[in-house]
Length: 553
Image (cartoon, rainbow, N blue to C red):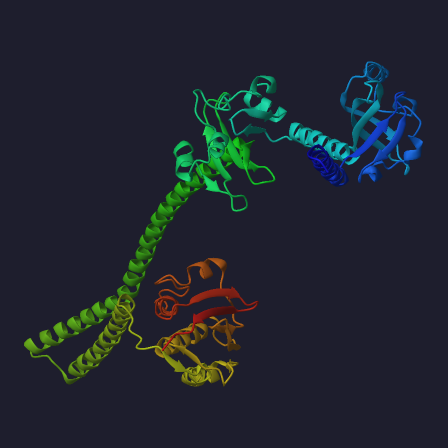
């Protein structure tokens, strides 16, 4: 074989390899291939993607494209397509619709080129086709979603605007128009998102988020309650006052979030604004009311303090009057005894000097002296006892250490001290305190309180020749001893109950009662044992209710 034959053979092999490669690429292509004759009728379809026609190829073979039930294009577009064929011109991306085998409308995009035979005569068209049905459906769905989102954005009562990475406004809803007074047609496309909010150019929070500014930089522009979002990275929220907005300024809540594409790249920021002026004004008004209430409370406390001081002065006046009244009687009796003794002594001295003193006169003087001294001694003791009671109340009571004791046993001991008087007056005292109950407090103070209350009941609750009963009960509730001392006596009037714990208050003042008993009991209960005491109508009689906290130790 000569050299020309060898070169030809090598060239043929190269062409066969290129054809094989082209065939492989054709099989791998996502498009199908078609061919038409010189009369523009389909003669064949080939390639691996012909199944994407979703329509039998036989419905195409022997027919021109415009002879099929083509949809989705106008008559003018069909005529322009036919003219392109008549002129043997190439065409690209001609889209039309046909009904598929499954009844679903299929949308095709085709491109074609004329081809010629070896003699240069027109032989037909060859081209590619793609099924765009799914793509156009996805695009339509995306457009529908975009339209819905746009409607949602426009119909949202919350003002919203969106910036792209070039700080251009891409969205400005109707609520934002109403808030700022700037129409969307004037705002969209501009980079001046500050207008409507500020008097001079400055970055909005959306601008700062688009620039990915640091939190410190954002705080430099927004001094309010700035906080980062716990849900969205790079998102911020704040509350700011805008003095340039409206007639008197507006308080706005601002939320800004970055926008990212599917790859995570920043594509802009969305800012929402909410007018919270009414809420802030309400909070400020509430704060003002709170301050006024605090001031009124302070004034009330001062008034109460003044009233307390006035009450103390009134109590002091009653106490002084009581002390004067109680001391006046024994001191008067002492003075009377001294005067009587002085008169008897003068008569005795006169009889002695005149030497007329008789035995009978001397015996009479001795008898008068004994009576006077007895009267003086009795009233001195009464005065000294009253002064001792006053000293006891004035001093800081020392009741020793808190200790464990049995209330039932102490009640029994106190009752025993009054057995004789109760028997004579037909008064019974019942101890209902549980015997197993133990309590930790000041035992001596507890004993004194019980004695005072029983003594007070015997003195005031039961007039002479009127029997009755006194009942004592106790229980533990919430680490407190609840003690009740109740009688079925004559009870107290409301005025007497209101003043019962005042010093020197007594319904029998001037009849041997100082009015210091319940005051002493009140002091022991509240100041020493840290408890509370109240008086209640027992219908009939009176009930004294005491609550004592448990001590430690």
